[in-house]
Image (cartoon, rainbow, N blue to C red; front, top):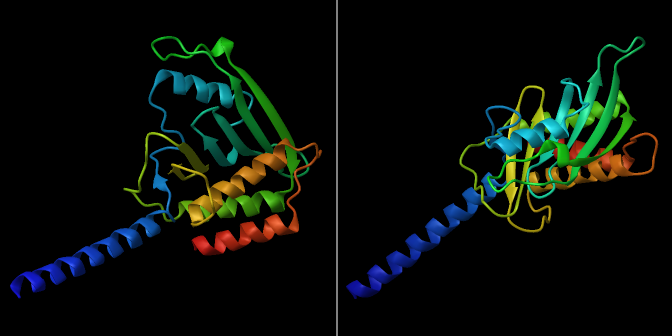
Length: 215
């Protein structure tokens, strides 16, 4: 009888613990991991990549979406405050096409080629994207799962930065996956043949809905 009671007790504890882990994991998936600065580069070749990716981009960036896995890339919205008539915004995507690494893991910047796309974007659209990133970064949480394999991304505004890691295909099951998938859509739009980056009504609605979900 005692063994049966002990067995039932252990089952209840196991189910309770599993439920807590599952719930905490789901909560964590809705948060970015905080970064001390927009870019937490450590190794020398990563610093070189940073310099290469941001070559020709000013420091006045209202958002950054950085892919730190595979072919390194960055999407930024640049803010030109010195425009005579009014503030101008430009969305820019830069990606390393090829790179060479020395045996020590140090990059040779002279052998790196980068593809670049840039388009004007309206202030209204730029502000919507900034509001989304600000909302996502307003509630970062330390201790979220970060892996060695998979894909790593960094998100930043002018004052905040956070990162995310995904081990498999994105499905949009949580807010951070939705944020990443939406940012990828902005990359696709920036790389399109259109002369100007114009958010569609559907994309604006998606941005506004996710912004509200982060609040």
